[in-house]
Image 1: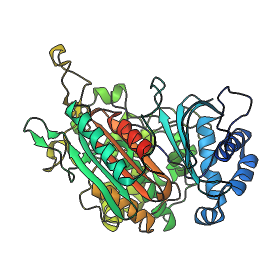
Image 2: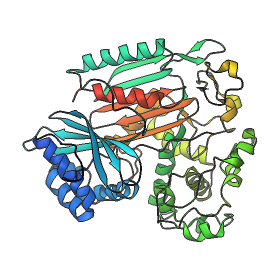
Image 3: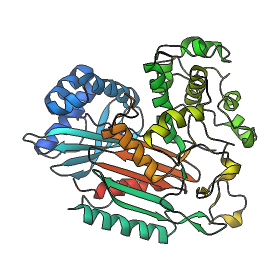
Image 4: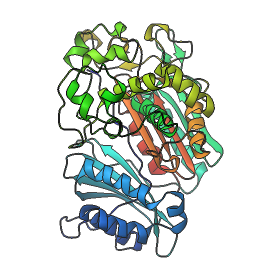
Length: 458
């Protein structure tokens, strides 16, 4: 079964520790004091977090991203994670502290606190990344002294990973307005021995959800819909009356709708070639009962994002793919990004290769094309294609306000996508962009991005 990874949010704004609930001793430094205060505030709730943000965020940063926007993100994260308890210190310096954190709601997360060089330090941002529960802790070594050392370490790492067939794909690193590293490794098509290139198109998986999010907010800003509108108001033929009357666009965006996934038994039994439009996916999930009352919980929902795609089509009067290309890709300068029928991939598009769904035991050590697992065409939940430079152009367009969404900020962005034979990461901070695209199984790109971040000079 395919599983699309949930987007990672690099929350550039918050965090802190319960002083007596853990044996992990945070550093006895001003930075350690800040992190401890964050965790304490996070666990205490919104009043404590408000006080923390007012104390530990620089005034110019609060002007850039207002307090209420930061509190909105805190509520989203609090709902998903519950209480936080540090279990391991991965890295500590004057400029950053990285911890493994256990949350009361289940997931193990890695938090990196970026600290401003003030006295006392202020919180520049926080990177939040889901961790595999069984993954042994953290990447090797700490930040490099310069961009030159960083690039050299990354290139050596990728060369070695590719030589061991552990990485296939392309990587771009940018600092400020300058691309400092851009290189491709492995094969885009093993059958023809075609190499990956820096301009090869890769399947993004769930990264495409950010474009759906932007499209919804564009239409809301034009007065064509409200985030409080129910599904039934906009899609009068939606097959589940309960969901139609209760679930709002806000619930769909925040994954609190109770609508489930479209992957499962129905998907496995459906001829994948028949899934070529947004509405083609509806029979896989739309008539199923809600998994919980809207707003009661948060659960990752590909189905919810398919409903958003249908709403975009209804409100805009055009198909989802055309809307995104015209209103997001073209303004952002993303000339090589699109959704493709899987049997009509254009030249210079990477074939995905996976260890999953092996047809025979004799192929146990061989990656196979992921073609049988793919739908006929991707959707508003994921499955579009893009390139290194197009994703860099997207970040720059967000920074310039060409395309925007209140749910993601370009100086604290981290989104990921993955399924058999595909894994992609896009991250950006105040002065950097990291793009890792791979046509191998997860966590190929995630592991690579984690190591790249660990070496990045502070």
